[in-house]
Image: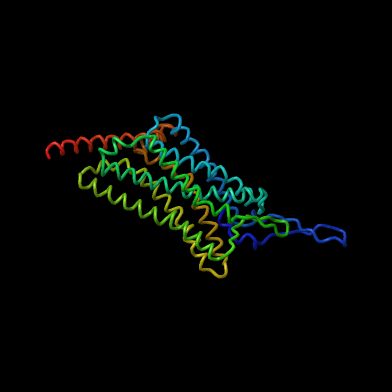
Length: 344
């Protein structure tokens, strides 16, 4: 994962010297010390849990939204979001193995590609959350237009554009990620040609993947809440609670990562506290990939009622409920606008 950065090339390892002829160079055999460190063991357990919950949880969402539910604009959003998280979780085993061995054995291609997938997940997830927020805002402010123009085909065009933009912004991971072998151990780290380059990459990720989306989403939600309050239709805010939970989970999980990455830019000498913060915050960010399926289950409707149903039914009902309520709101708002136009 990207918390490794430039620290990996100076990591401390245990080595044992093999018995060799006196005329040959000393050969060092790398030996992992992960299981002797509390932090490493804790992060390893967290990584395995994130992988299991995220891989199978998002797999269920993909199966339900893609094959068991009627294809709508809302299910298209959530399906794409689940695919993003699923792909990220599928690459976690590479990092888990690397953590256990304290050695990157998968070569330079996977070093670059695994990091690229991490940031692809970050950008695609937040871009999709922005798209959903704008979609909700347009549906509330312009219900008649939205009811006529919101189609599944147009939704997938927007999804593809969001993914393409996310892929482009994730390119620095492919360009600057590299491997280095030192005393028998290989590390995967960021190799920036200039300190200025590192600053540009970190700030661009922070702005494009956090600040700008936060401003857009906050603006959309302010408009939505104002519109619903003015129309005295507070009950219609129910379909937005799943989306609100998804947005809150994303920003809560990714904020610590961006904070420590920005702190790293101001550090002339990397401290152990900063390194630990980068490690922990990276896994907190990764946790976002398994939270979405959990939120679909417990935020869809009343928990006590849903507890009696199966896990698959919970996820399907959560996504279907939002689609039904949004549709009812659009229909109700459209009829209200129609009546208002006849009086004018």
